[in-house]
Amino acid sequence: MKDTISTMIKGMAMGTAEVIPGVSGGTIAFITGIYEKLLNTIKAFGPGLIPIFKESGFKGVWTAINGAFLIRLLGGMAFGVVFGVFAISYLLENYPPAVWAFFFGLIIASAIYIGRQITKWGPGEIALMILGAIVAYGITTIAPAEGSESLVFIFFSGAIAISALILPGISGSFILLIMGMYSFIITDTLKPALRTLAPDKLGIMVVFALGCLTGLMTVSRLLSWTFKHYRNLTLATLTGFMLGSLNKIWPWRNATDWLRDKTGAIILKDDGITPKKILVEENVWPGNYNGDDALVVAVVVLMIVGFLSVFLLERLGSKK
Image (cartoon, rainbow, N blue to C red; front, side):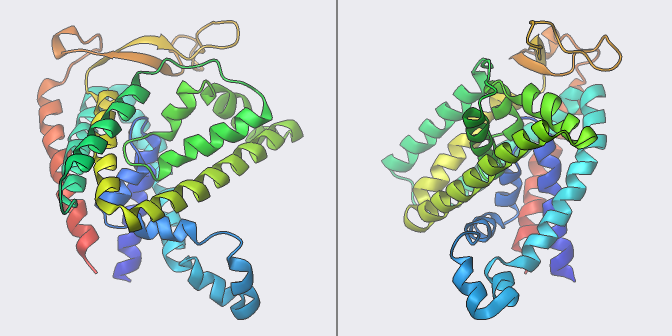
């Protein structure tokens, strides 16, 4: 029972993180101690299940994919996504600096936590950490592309975006944004597909889902292999990813561009006034922040809380 509750709590934390642009569920998986277990579970899906099914039936397949763990984790993630959509979205709209401060502290502590797992630091580890930080920082500064409605591009956008689920420091929603596919996939396709079940929209979502599945299977196998053969180098790279991603979650940011339609007009929310989604922001100090309130005290407090929460999650992950 305790294991079930613990796994669901970790899943809820991952699901909530996935709702936050710039925050990865892979980060939460790592600091709660289930990262490699999750990689191996995902890696289990594939053609190799066919002989297992022939030999042992559904019971063998269930064991091979670690079904009990997967169901608990997915259940927690589903709850976390719902919680994130309503609670976190509300907080981001009304108190953005405070929310970003919490995650800023969390990511700093997470990078320290991952770095501590490296048993020996050498030139290779240092170089890959720096390279990881540069790559992640570069991703956060890329201007959004135009995107494409080509099925091939849709497939690859799914494959790349889903990698964020298991790569600490990389946000899937932000990847879609910089590829120019966020509006097309989420606004123009997913919502109409769920509302009307239009065949053309559902077809696009199937292609996108196949891309996600392909990316998930590929990246999980690659990371599992690198963890097995080059653990310290892999951890150093992931530490760099975490540090580089801090640029995206600095508490005080002013918007400089917003999500636009094909004509170039800013897409607004239902109120007809508020932009639907921010595309580009610049980091500023509290004195230059354009929001209603810089919430300096709250930012400092929540940054500390976010930092300390990693060690709480670490303790949760260390419990059998």
